[in-house]
Length: 340
Image (cartoon, rainbow, N blue to C red):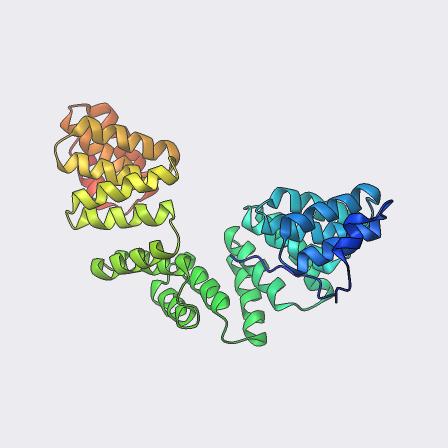
């Protein structure tokens, strides 16, 4: 998600030489300097000037907000949140600050708090971005009815928006309607082709439909835009199905280099090991995948099969039961368990 940052469009008539040479500068002097640095895109210098202003006058609302904007651009989101919290204690109804804090909370995975902030914004102004971001928050909380209501409101405001189409795609994907999800994602990509998250989701749908060539194309396109562990793992899983073990292993390792807790990368390695007769290695990789995702049904099933080859019948039976508990319609797990 892209954070929308608001830089104050204030005309600057300010002499840096006077500022730098001046003595006994006031908080307002530092504030004016921060504005000038900010407009020029010098985020660290602006951040420092706003910090000087806040030190002298902690209740200077504009300095708090603008320093938060600078902090985001310096990849210091935690600092931005602290400034926004301070500002909102002073001005609880500052809609711009609430909107920015909600956006940062959404990015940090604090979905309920983000929803609460966007709700306050919506109560005061019918903002497209607030409705859209609240819908995304509801989606992450699996509150699908509330999500759909907000997306519907957004559609009455703006019918052809890439992020809105992508959010509808995420909604339908979570509902299990892959055809509608793909249709929404395609509309989003027509407006914004370079969206790694949407491309990755399209790859997932193509993989589920066993269009592996298309899935590989989507995943590779996503990786050309963003090096995400989940996308590398998804590509590895496809390559496993295509028996391209060398490519699968390479991509699984890339996923684990980015995120050691990526369960699908460990599962891909487990499949490679199992298919090559390395049952204990397969068990170990599956165990690691399950440690990072205790609801990974495929990992329980594969570990059970490897354990059966190792004549570890009790452990295999327990894993088959767990796989069936997670996926009651899994015929392979049911058949293997009935034979135990």
